[in-house]
Length: 178
Image (cartoon, rainbow, N blue to C red; front, side, top):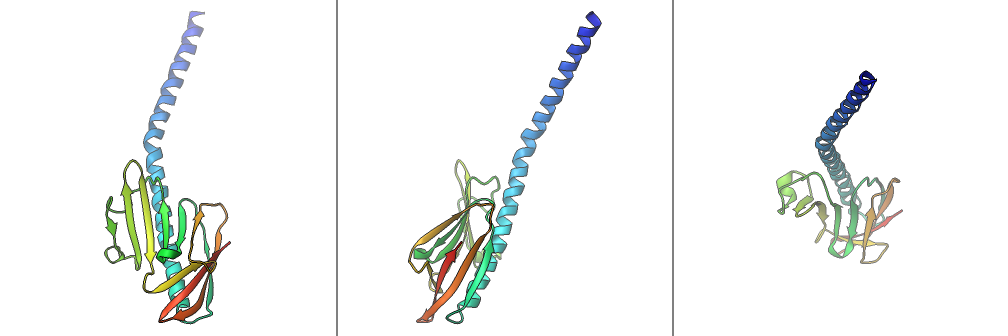
């Protein structure tokens, strides 16, 4: 009887040791996995925003031009800030610090074309990537001087960009999404 109880006690102890080791490994691996995932999201978004910038520069040449872009948001928010003539991506509570903390990095320093980056580090890390079209383009959303925020979704957004007219050398670009 004593021999059987010893086997059960050893089994329980080895199981607890195994679970503790697995827990320790996961506690170190989970933050690294989250950082790698957020870094990939940021890099994919940079590529997508560069594509949007190219589309906008193409359609700004002639009134009546319309282009569509399919944009997938796994995490974060895409904001069409028409009053400020900016397109922004904000990744809140990021596990990855993309650039120098609490310092705005202009596009010229990052070799990212027209993209600007700001990584805010307080209690959480928020990464903002944006394109400023002030002086180059006049943005509207659904023909109104308003902003629109697209949140992460499992379905890709279909975004329509239309050059409505060129006024004084500045193209008026209307944005719609579905």
